[in-house]
Length: 141
Length: 388
Image (spheres, rainbow over the protein chains, first blue to last red):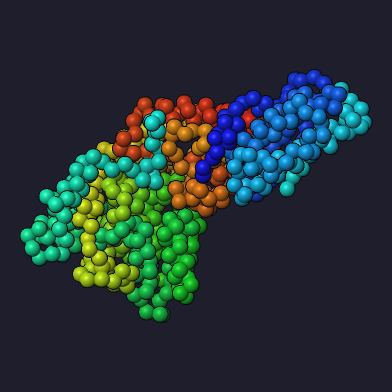
């Protein structure tokens, strides 16, 4: 399997990798998995005033999946919370030169981000503050 | 170019410089380039080199040289053994017994024969990769023509009990074919002593060239040829003999030393295993008590094998078998051993060889350990199925 230099760079990056443990403030997480595709991914975000201050990811999968998760976290950080629903697996697939047959894996990243967005809406924008507790949403296939 | 440590010797090996020297002597206008079938003096010299190589191959596996037919490799030998044996028999005896963990050249030949109406029994292996002589005995019927069992599995390195399986086959009056591509020259193989009827051999797994192999055919066994042509090898395969390739194979078999090299490689393999085991979360595949010295298959649980391979551009390794490496499906051999898809896809095969040294093992352990830890830290919160 050949990988683009974009994939190689993001695959090796440790920035934004790992859980958001110990962070204070409103943290919400969303995850998705697909056993048949050998993919699991979780994003945790800390938002304030409708802005994504910090985005971290955890991921199990192939180099394309890991690189796309890193790219998503980088793209989201500093953006408006609505970006969680706007991130597009197809756009990232093109940017990273991900083969079409692997698009399904990147769609799980999209699922995890959408789940994150729903949780964030319930807390910061909906039902009030989480007081620092982590709220998880999960989508499995 | 950065040096890449080669740990894929189960896929293929670098050609030994001494083999290269012998091959070069058969190329070029001043060398032994002639057609071995030609009657003139140059042809005679080439023929003598071919016969010397045949003797060397036979000596290494204790097989009569006159019954060794050179061909393009073990894949062709496996095809000829199965299709040739079944097609040469009458319609009343059409049953083949093999295992689920054979090389694809066996399994796909078996599928072809099934389409031709041959019944095939695929034996299951146990969780360590072994099939038993009792399983073989139970599978043989009145219609069985051939049993085909590999000597050493190419993915996990498990050694099958060929002497006992041969005894069963002889007692039941059926032919035994052994795919010895991964064993010849690496561990003791006694074709005549064990009573093997057909045996596939190759050069490139033991520091010989690619594109050359052989099939041993016990005297008196009829096979339907796959390649017709003038003056075929022991009546089986037409085509001009590739003198330089055959000479290379002969030299590789001369140089192979299962006792000395096998012992050295087994020590390196254990060094490697102990280091990997110490990382935690690493399990060994195949029967450790019946394992070829040059193969170590390990599952590094909680990471995707493709990611680990990509993280190690300085080490040449295989994820599953070489033939499967670009295919996302988990290895059929590993799943036959009972591994889950996720664990099968977290599996790497280390193939050690003549030029592997202890310092290489130490470097591999350091690099694999570092990248394994980095990647599993990325997936620390992952659900259990990712590692079990």
